Figure 1 (cartoon, rainbow, N blue to C red):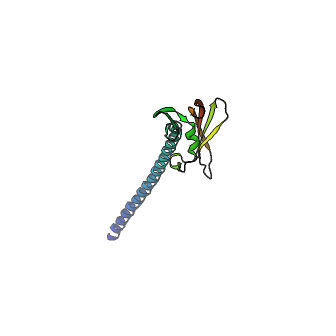
Figure 2 (cartoon, rainbow, N blue to C red):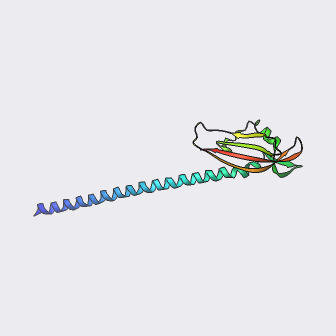
Figure 3 (spheres, one colour):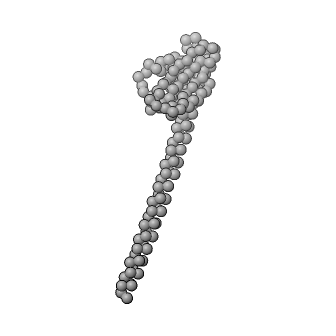
Length: 157
């Protein structure tokens, strides 16, 4: 009879171990699925944030002190063309603010066909280019006139 009891005990321990192993495997599968879903959500949030930041550059660039025009110490809602021309001569690195982007200012009216490259950093490899543009007021101090321009921001991804 003792042999039968020992066998029943062994069978119950084996059943318990089997249930424990199954439970552990299911728990691991659940954790892996949770991890993958969480990572996918974080990547989507990062992409959404980068897209928002990219589109916000259209309104931030004209507000930057490096480009904003002022008259007698009062800021105005326009881009100073002389500041744009002098921006490229600065030795300051704006990669932290802009990243891999191309920022262009075109004079639309009057028709002068002038384009000013404000910032241009391209990555070695990219798969697509996103582009957003907006009209801006430009002050040209060389002839003391306001002009209409288009600011174009391109993002490389």
